[in-house]
Length: 158
Image (cartoon, rainbow, N blue to C red):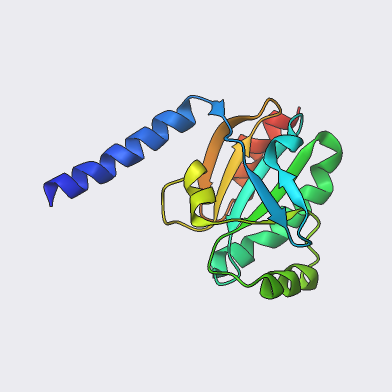
């Protein structure tokens, strides 16, 4: 039991260290809802908010209106929100949901392995903040609050 708890703390400590020291975002290539291939590094030059979410996750759905608003308001300053689905998911359900709430940013079809490249927790949603140079600057677990956006994303847009 002590080893298990120690392992958990070690994983959390490593994640804190990794986030504390900016590291290059891993090269990720995923399909969007139309089947088109999208490379995350294609957004280099923009401040990217990679948002891992799922249709079955109530907090994920609850935060999406805020993401839509920020994409609309800060797109001209170089913000790019990118939604990455987390399984299990049905493409048809994702399409219907994103159309209904009028998502204005790319939605990519992810996997558990995709999320593990950025975050090893089981928490959903998780948002990874990547600066204009492709460096991971921060990780936000749970619904991203306006205060967190102001502190962690907005300064990167200036």
